[in-house]
Image (tube, rainbow, N blue to C red; front, side, top):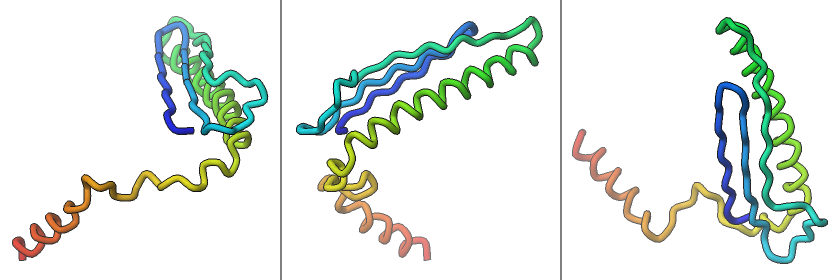
Length: 109
């Protein structure tokens, strides 16, 4: 999946999570929608303790549901992502950064 957009909105009454996935070409999505929006109500009371308890429960429900959905996608995509370069590797524009850091370290000593 090349581009993933996830947004999280927390209001006092609900948590809404929206994501859009772009699986690699050739992946059989088995008819699953590549985007989803889920809303999780925050049941709270009149005190901060009750509100944060309800917020904590809604966050746990959101984490579990979205995590399960994304795990299904990971299983569908499978090995199609293995050939991609890890995010931590330097790109062409970053080639000289290590040299600059080394020069700074030498100047400090």
